[in-house]
Amino acid sequence: MNINFEKRSNPTERSKDDEFFVTRHSISPYKLNEGIIKSDNPEESPDANKQWFNSDLTPEGLELAKEKAEEFFAKLNPGTDALFFVSSDLVRAAETAKIYLDTAKEKGFEIILPREKKDKTLELKNKAEEIGGGYIRKIDCLTLDHLDNMLREQIFQSKDYLNEVQDLVNVSDETKEKWAEARKIIEVDDRGTWGNNYAAHSEEIQKIFPNVKSAKEVYESKFKNMLRLVRFGQDQINKQNPEKNIKVLAFSHENSFLYFLNKNFGESMKNCESILFKVEGDGSDKASKISVTAKGQTKEVIS
Image 1 (cartoon, rainbow, N blue to C red):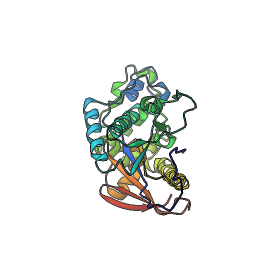
Image 2 (image 1 turned 45 degrees about the vertical axis):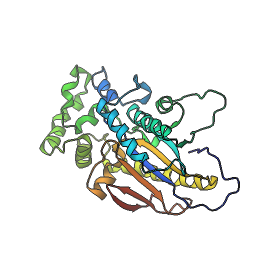
Image 3 (image 1 turned 135 degrees about the vertical axis):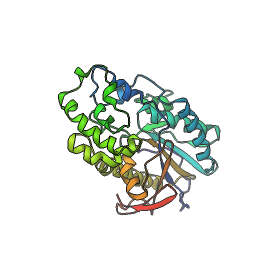
Image 4 (image 1 turned 60 degrees about the vertical axis):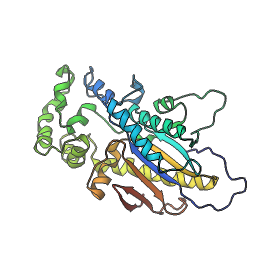
């Protein structure tokens, strides 16, 4: 993570109040998911490069993101806090980040550019940068590149998505054979949302569909990579010793947090809910603890 901001002219010890927030995207119609399921290849892996749209929030989602952005920045101070935006490159996350970005600009916050402009234009490489106009950086551990098969991922929905496939000839025999068995698990104990069902039943479903990653496996990869990113980011901030407190705002998806949140707090992640990560110490010690605040409680973790 390259963070570009003005250093102190005369570096001195400062009172650190750097924080890392990860926010789930707002309410979405999941256009990419729906598009794949109704396509000629419903078992395709979702590819952010194939997003044909620049908006993936419902009207309610747009309203919720604006409301939560106002609440979020009311707790910060543009005189003492500077902001650094990162996101998944899936449109629903990047669009949510853009709403927060626009709100922050309106309130006069300093926004740190993710990378230097070599000339008057900045080459935009992905949806996060494109939607954010160069002010939002894509971070791999925030996205959903671990998904193997879109239709099988939808097994956790309350809705039976096999009925949404336009032509079942495009579904593999293996999926059709195992679908009914997997759906029984969900229907017997339907927790109401994809996230709740995934957290509760992913290990059982994995026995039927081995390529579906369990919530614990995603935690071991994505969530722990986020902890390493937080520690690395704190180390970089300390080296540059900026005048202002740095608040890193990351926008992602619930998948990476489900195991951790349910294990520690007994709940999943709501739309536009934020989780706070804070490093104890300077971040350079790999064994240093990181505190995670969610659901009004704080837990300590070691990556």
